[in-house]
Structures are given as C-alpha cells and as structure tokens.
Amino acid sequence: MFDDDLAQSLVDRATTFQRALVATLCLNRAVALTYDEWADREVAGFRQLIDDSTEFCRARALGGRPRTGPDLLDARFREVLGPDDWPGDEPDGLAAWLIDVVSIADYVIRTWSEPDLSDSRCFNVLVASYSLAGMVNDDAVQPGAQDLGELEVTRQIADLRAVTGLRDPIGVDQLDWLMTESDALREAYRRRFQDVVSKYESEQ
Image (tube, rainbow, N blue to C red; front, side):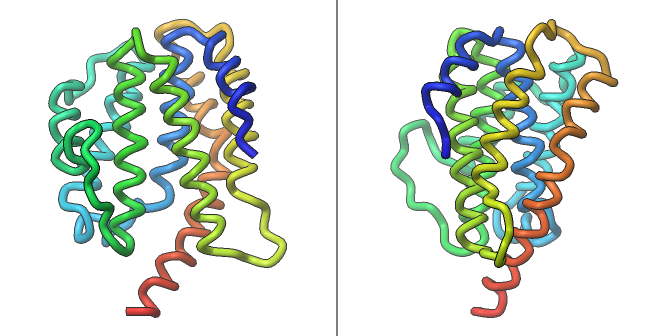
C-alpha cells in the first residue's frame, strides 16, 4: 500500500534534481505498459510525445540540452490532456491507458522544469504511477502473481534512497544503472498489460 507519509518524507529530503531523477524512473516503467504499434491509432502522436519526453529527461539528467523544450512539450501535453484542471472525459478502451501514461509524463517534465514545485510534482508522479500499476494488476489478474502496486511502491522507495547524494548532472553509467534496476518490473508491466490488451480485443 502507498504510504503517503513515508513517500512525502523521502521526497522532502531529496534535492530538486534527485526528485526529477526519481520521477524519470517512474516514467521509464510506465511507458513499458503501452508502447506498442497500436498506441498511435488510439492517441495521435503518442509514441513521438513519449519519445521526446524520455529524451528530455535523459538529456537533463546527463547535463545535456534536450531536443524538445519544456514549453513545446507542455503545448503537446495540453493537446492530449486539455488545459490544467479541465474536467475532460477520459476516453474509453485502450486509449484511457495511454492518457494515464501521458499524464505521468506531463508531471515528470514539470518536475524537471518547475523546480519550485518539484516536491509536489514528484509526489504526483509517485501516486499516479502507483495507481496505474494497481489498475494493471486489477485488470489482468494472474493466479499467484505478485501485486504490481506493491512492487511499484517498493521500487519507488528504493529509487528515492538510491539517488541520495547524486548531484546534477550524473554520468551515463549511473543513469543506466538506475534504469536497469527497474528492468524486472518493467517486464512484469509489459507482460501483464498484454493480458489487458488481449482481453479488450477479445471483447470487440
């Protein structure tokens, strides 16, 4: 179960850069759910938007200049998600999952680009990622399978502790190591989400 107090205390102790790194690691896992050829048919431009978002995060972590700036990314997020605080209707079917991933990506980019709000933005990423993992778990139940929500929380706490002491920027080896720590969970998401996709397609 997501522990608000523990997560918030660890986020509070982290630097702005460390919060952005942890948010990036959450996005790295979330995109494994929906990164297939059908994605662009459901949400136009989805894969390019996610590609540009992940490239932005990687460039910032390594001290480079992203190909796409945060303002342009924000404009593209608004095209998909609508204005902030807009009570838009979530689409049906598989597109709903993509919108959730885009929403996480939006919060992640804001964690990088809004340093004064990085604590709340990072916390939003943690909660949204836990919620997404839980929904995948509920929609693709496998007997004896580990709870993805619990695994996501465990990974988040480990990430928050792993970035302690890291300063802006980090090296490629450090970033790749942090990403690799999520490989098993990413694969679990990918496999479990295939059950969701198969279930949806069988009902059409």
